[in-house]
Amino acid sequence: MYEFHTDYKKYFDIQLSNARQWVLPFVEQAKKIEPGMQLLEIGCGQGSLLRAFAEKGCICTGVEMYPLWLEKAKEWLQPELQSGAVKLIDSNIYDVDPEKDLGTKFDIIILKDVIEHIHDQQKLIGWMKHFLKPAINGKPGGVIFFGFPPWQMPYGGHQQMMQGWLGKTPYWHLLPMPLFKGLMKVNKQYSEDLVEIKETGITIERFENILRKTGYKVLQQKHWLINPVYEYKFGWRPRVQFALVKAIPFVRNFLTTAVYYIVTPAAPAADLMSVYGHKPTTQTNNQTSE
Image (cartoon, rainbow, N blue to C red; front, side, top):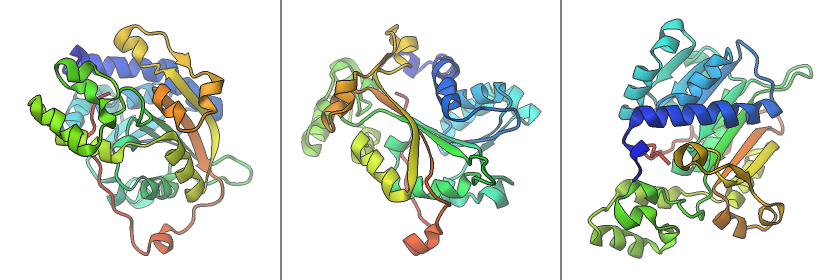
């Protein structure tokens, strides 16, 4: 475990710097950000990205279920909350109707370091179409930003949250579940949150397959050998993944520390009620810091 995992303000500032320098420019390469745009962040944590986009004039809504992060977001985002630039919602995203409850659909949806914590990822990604503004008269519709660590990357199990050698050793999260649990128990650091992350971890191939199945097209993508946020955490300069590694399915997951994607519906949103026969429901893990 590193200092910033328990210093919440420092972690907020790290994520804010990363959002300003890396996430915002990446989004703008696919969709020009203009004042008044509606932005939704699912799993907004302490609200760093909400502040970064609010600084660009976006009207931001953050959805967060984890009480500690919601409390910190309310603390750090006081100016934005008072001005109306940011609104925070304590809710399961499936309990939210975008037009009835929020009064709008969205130009941009953000899921950063969130999709790897969610059960039934295909249902969530498909359901997001209901929250996006549609393309009208040649004007592009809404987009979704995804950023996540591939499951097989060195610390894809978020084990850096642990103490001692367990927090510094890469790849042991790939052990079979009985050995994984046993190692934590022997070291008196058993974590049900890490067990859940092992259950929900997602690969690049699975993610891209879900996009195809749910009817999205990729507008832009970037695979990172060195995750940009590591610059603020460890002083490591960000580095894009080598083209050869990026082109090798499965292997790339072990050597890629983060991926960024911008996607948009390939066609108008289908009636997902008819697809699933009911309103989808999902589970999310408590958001765990990288």
